[in-house]
Amino acid sequence: MLPTDTGRKEKLLGNLTTITKRIKSACEKASRDAADVQLLAVTKYASVEDTRLLVGTGQIKLAGESRVQDAAKKWIAGPLSDLRPLVELHFIGHLQTNKAALAVDCFNSVDCVDSMKLAIELNTHAAKAGKQLPILIQLKLTDSPSQYGVSVEDAPALLEGIRKLSNLSPEGYMAIAPVSREPETLRPLFAFVKKIFDRDFPERTNKDGRRNRLSLGMSGDFEQAVAEGATLPRLGSLLFA
Image 1 (cartoon, rainbow, N blue to C red):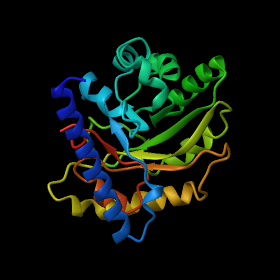
Image 2 (image 1 turned 120 degrees about the horizontal axis):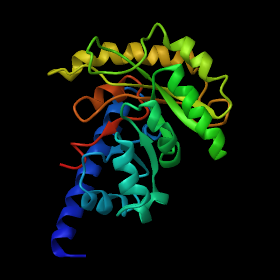
Image 3 (image 1 turned 30 degrees about the horizontal axis):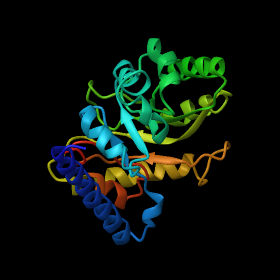
Image 4 (image 1 turned 30 degrees about the vertical axis):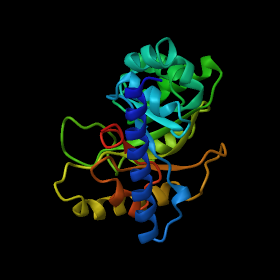
């Protein structure tokens, strides 16, 4: 390893340590067990070199990508293919139905299902691949046309339909909070989403024995999300700074 790589690796591990401490502190303040929170490292914008340095330490177990073809080029047939067995790879972007087959091949979990049409397509390709595909349903929390997801009102019906598909394993909800200059103002919204999650996923695990997850919180608001019950915060810019 080159000296420059060593310095960068130390910086990345320092970022990870700081984030882990902040998650633990948020949990302690909310009387939560920090072991219930898993960090998802958003590697979609990170350089291959940084991703390799951090994943290679064995301290990152979950990674997130938002472009199916780019992820496949990196993780399946590219420079990170040797590290692929070390991570549970999540798709966290907007998924078009014509990319569903590649997503099933490439990812361990699809965290952005927002329609029955997409769910059926994923189920079809998962059945062909002989696999049970974990998924999260994406909730839409804003009126922004640039954000995807199903409305909170329509989410239960979508969940009911997905639970009838034999090759999908719904584990919970994912949501992106509206941009806020004051993260504390988002806490009531995070608390509301947690209530919806508890209502629809009341058990710790789903019918397939998989852990139910609430994917909330990003680099700017993860502490507030964790304090209100998030179990899978997604961090990229803070981790790879």
